[in-house]
Image (tube, rainbow, N blue to C red):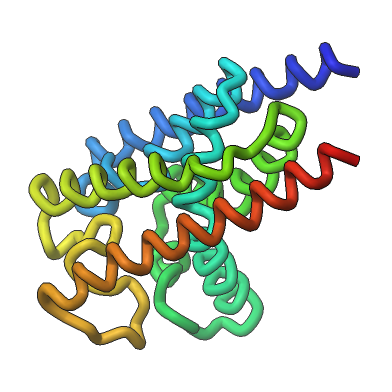
Length: 202
């Protein structure tokens, strides 16, 4: 059982590395619809490496950053899928797109986090202080997105909100971005470190 689980973890890790590289390559070839600097592409790549090499801290760092934004994405996605109407406008691009490859890549939002959490449970503990490194990673990606992408692309929502009802602008929005990211990372880290470590002690 342990050997099979280890193989499954490595296989899924390799799949995520391949998927992220495919996503980044697709973004280079189609800059009008995607950017290599999107959090989800970077996180999926690092999760893949972390799973393949058995580095639970690397995996947990990405979960801290992505769990809540991906939850928002999923709620918006399923609302549109079921009702045919936009909710927060986060996933409207998916339903408007005719690019099969891009849509296939985007669907990773539906399964990467829950499957990764299962592997992470068996892989190791979830450090209580990993949130600090997660926030540094998020800040670094913010800086790269700010200086190396166009405001019109709004990569990682660094220039304006990706949610249609939030209308904060200017420096106030950037302050809000960092505050919200810090809060999401900290809460995610506390919740999953508590749950995973508590269950493993049983």
